[in-house]
Length: 155
Image (cartoon, rainbow, N blue to C red; front, side):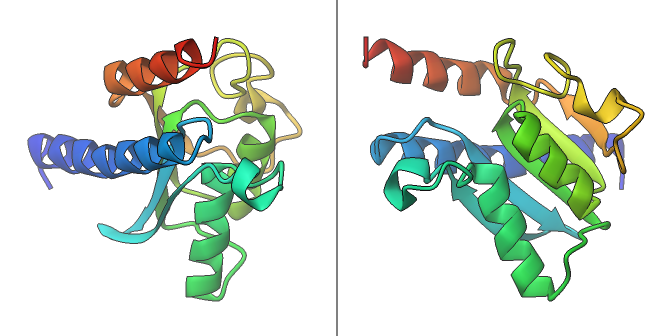
């Protein structure tokens, strides 16, 4: 696969994650969406559902990891790539590591709650079991605007 094809696919999967984030916002959830892909096929896509499910662990990343693990009948996802609109928090970074996800693509950085390139920098810790390849800034502008708009409307 050539680099331009790969860039197009990355953008396409992030577009799906952004659609999930928009749907989460429509439900009153913090607008974060995620898509989990294996061999170019979407295994799972979802957005935050913490309010809907009364579950503080129902972040978009956790939702798609759970769905994909069930679909593949495995607790590990070593050949899978995760696209998420916001830099994962410590809980989600831990789940990504334990699931052995191959690559993480995320949109907007999160200086306050992120744990990949901000905060704890989970994957750089010596206690981290597995660190995916990380690519940031994909769909960053759109993801950032969605988040800012969401929080401004609640102030």
